[in-house]
Length: 398
Image 1: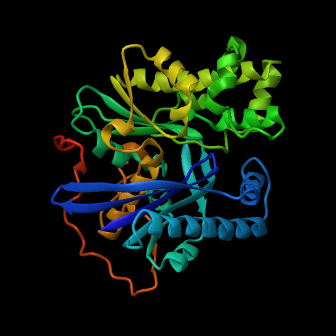
Image 2: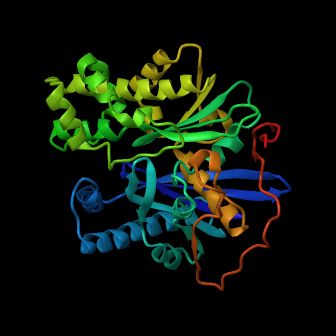
């Protein structure tokens, strides 16, 4: 089955599309990546998303407009992926949508909202669409995040030591795959969320992020500000746990700066970069990680990667590219796999990764132009992932 995955993260700069061919045989799923592309949001749509994100107030009209606008943008990305990555021939689209709110109370996720009406994608591509993948896990008592845990566990299974996958988006999440233990996954805290907010704030909106980590590299860490930021109770919560821009946003940063004034914007960027490195490293040390496989936009920030390496001497750092998964495509490919499992009637969650009562088949299905015909339900969930061109590894432990 040829599947297109569409993903937009908490940085809301655009849509990553990736396509792959999947084949399930027994407890093994084989994946052949077909490529990836980036589809930027228009300036108008980005402005609308930013205006509706927490802690801003919004209206049902604004949410309706966004649901349509994001859905149309995802439809455009799907059409491009169908033509450019699949030569016009695919079976399924899986859309993550744009997260607008992740409702957490006292560590419990009460709901999660991803916008991007899938009907626009189905209409434009003619293909069935799996969407709204997080809500079923939340209904089963889970965090609804990180949903990449199953993909990570299959990808890292069989590697020596205690490998972990780290994704550095707006929020950083980690999946630890220790031998003879259930995989553990959780959000460690902000990766780019506060950095991007600071870059926009101090540049008056002319810079969207700290390009190549240059600002942070030119600054000095303010120990007082770092201590203030590390006082955040979230970091002391046990996993599974999840967070988002509902917590880590510009007013949050400005409140910290009120308590620990830091006049030089480059020093603020340096301190925020160190915050990400310290919180990621703490999570790795807590779980004995010996190898860290990194993906996401933050992986392109050399200052952040250097700081993580400084905090984790003796831990091998590498890119998901080394395992056959393009760093910028990993989340889109992960959601493509989750949608593939959904149409085969297989769960896409790890309860040990989200805290749910049980594993769930994820998402809702919107038919394409043709009558909806699903594959025969599969009887065996995959325990290992084989990627074209990558050597086989043993199955993931039960």
